[in-house]
Length: 480
Image (cartoon, rainbow, N blue to C red; front, top):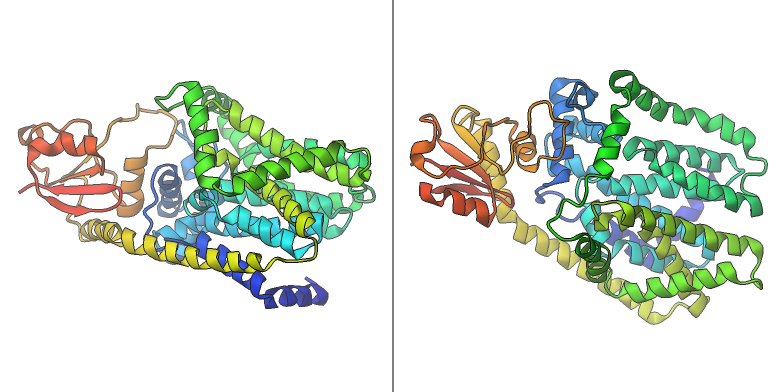
């Protein structure tokens, strides 16, 4: 970074609004970092990071017939490195996702400034991106969406800065990061950029710099080479099976899509929805207007194409999930910032500063409330961890109650309860599906560990065992 860029950054941080936005983004991105109990797919990823650390082998989860091939390893490697430094904690495993979210917020600000050249556009874009439930949920857990989206935004920013060397560096760095985080689907972005390049100067004169930084792609090439050497076409088979496996919910296809892509966005994006729809409409008008300069029309078409292709991929996936909209959020945020900048121009309404202040205070209050209310569950988790560390909780005297036991040699997939037990307690416990009576248990059984659900509690009710500890996701029962 040159001296002038340092000076520009320092000047930007002197703005009370910019500093407030930065503090708000950090606050939201790191909410619950010490007390939130990761679960579901997040704890599955955390378990793989622990396996790498304990085995001393960064490729351990990806070897053999049960190897996990659906996602590349970069985020798992990063979390494994964190656990070596910080221990097996929520902070250690979620840090890549949280920093990825912060990176997305920074890239959203840079893209808004690039397209609109007005501070107000930047402020609105950042607020729209970070102040919604989709950002908060999938940034603060160990998920891959924020890190992959950061790579995609870095690709876009790098392309827009071509033919500069910094542009080529950002383009290939973002490509490599995304390829090593979530797979080859990100290459669709390069195909979308090609038509834009026909009417824009971004590729002209960039060949030397693109070749100079192309070696950054060697890491993802090495990864997929490893997969091919050790697993052959198993990767393509598993990807196909994963894509076509169907909706895993109990809802109909229509109801599931409606829930994930209509109902959830309505609640999680809230008041931003009106601005998002206006922004998309205005970008469509810009792209189609013959009176607008061709480069500006091309920019509008590029943003719309990226939003469109991401939405189509999300809807086509047979297992709908609102998180697939995560990578759309920065793009519609940039569009929304443009709408507000065109509406108010250089005049920044007083209410904008008041709104940012109110959101900052509400964000602080929300994080404080979450930490206070989650603490009892965290205390229970620490109590169970202490039992495991003292050797009172062991595979010999403890049963884990689950609803499904994987088949032998089945490819590794998300199995939240055993994964959580392994990550948090370092134990691989024998599983039992039904525990109807005390007499049906092995004589050595002292504890039953089960997920904190009404169904599981009903199943073990006949035991009449007292509760030893309760976390956000677990209940530990002890035989009297």
